Length: 204
Image (cartoon, rainbow, N blue to C red; front, side, top):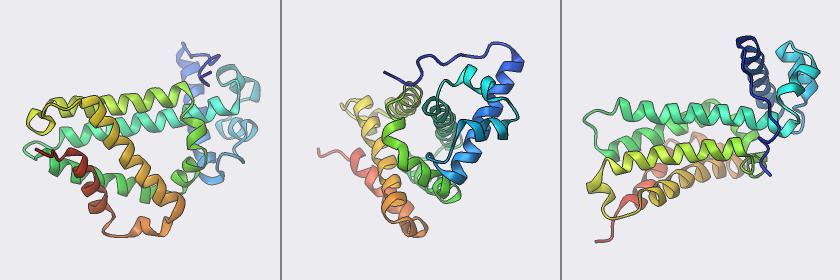
């Protein structure tokens, strides 16, 4: 069962503002304390709402954290769209290099947050919200691949996008989890981009 079941969606502007404040507070506490020490009580206090108000929209802690993860994935999709939009005249492989550099930059800037994410990634990826966000990101990558028929060839764009997207995420999460000091290695962006280029190369 997805964690999104039972979650109340806000309709009025005041309710939307309350949910926004709760999700923002969740991110702030999660980044500092991680999943285990993020509690609904501490989030409600940070957001300036009662615990009862929080439970109106988020029936349990897992749903609450999933909402924050969903927000981050939306930002990741916007980030990908911005790279494509400002890449006029650049080749797909050049854009891939830019995307790798930007991904590494994000992980470096928010390393404490991503360290917390890695701890609960398997749990969160079972939720409806996070799975939907990941699907949107893959679909965006597939749309880009369709716009580059010479690069895509006769390959399935959804499959190729799925492999590249999750390979990049998996690689960065592995660095955070097992060798966080390597996050500052200047060669990391190029190694990451090189791995993705390997998926794009055709054997013909």
